Image (cartoon, rainbow, N blue to C red; front, side):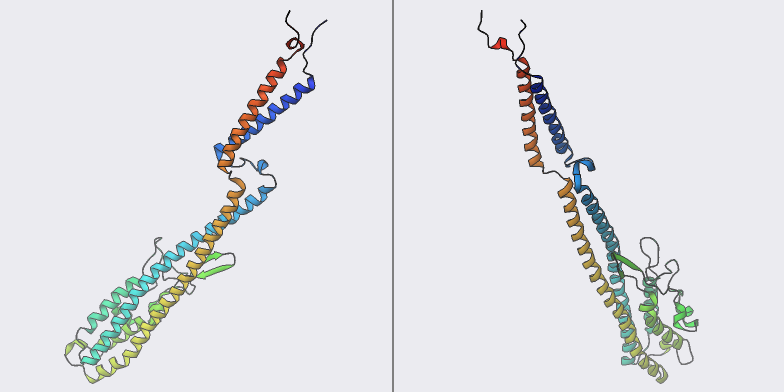
Length: 315
């Protein structure tokens, strides 16, 4: 009579299934340790896949808004520097007129006017990194100040004719449904300054002009310059108002940038919690899975070797 092994087909199938399960679990854990991700496909995430995509989309949107806001902050910061310089020029113009009246001497006044015009023109017609005119509004490919000399400015029928900028200020979207107006128009900050320059240059070239001809101002010259003092103060105020508005815009943009940065961090945290594996835990589990597989293989191997011969006494 033949002697059969004591293991049954059911036992063998059961142990084989344990080996397959342990091997599959080990492969999954090895993949997690190697990639740092819970799963390399959506199937491995189960019902968290939709939340993962929603979090990714929200994080990407926050980063896009933050990128736009950063560019706007750079522009606002540049405008702040230039508006400060323009304010200094307006104050220089006011001081020159006030000093001429106080000293009853207009010599050197027109040289100051020319210097202020040249520097103010450069600021008003400055360009950004893309070659667009910063103070052009919606017409940023055309120089917003269209005159290049005091003579051209004087020849115009009005100071408004010296400006070719658009009427729409540039805005940037910093969040869903929220835009911030960043742009500044040349005419909004430079019209009064150019108006004073036009008035003084026009008077100097007129019948009662030529401020530098004598060390003493004539009565018409003195009366004219006295009347221009308040106008020059108004010109400086216009520039200062523009600088103050730009400063408020900068603070608004900074707050929006901080908010978007916080949102991005939060949403990225959601993504990480869903798809990133806890590495210390994964490594511990990897070691455990390796031990489990090795144990299952050893048990299966020994089970297949057991028969009644193992228990019969030696002859």
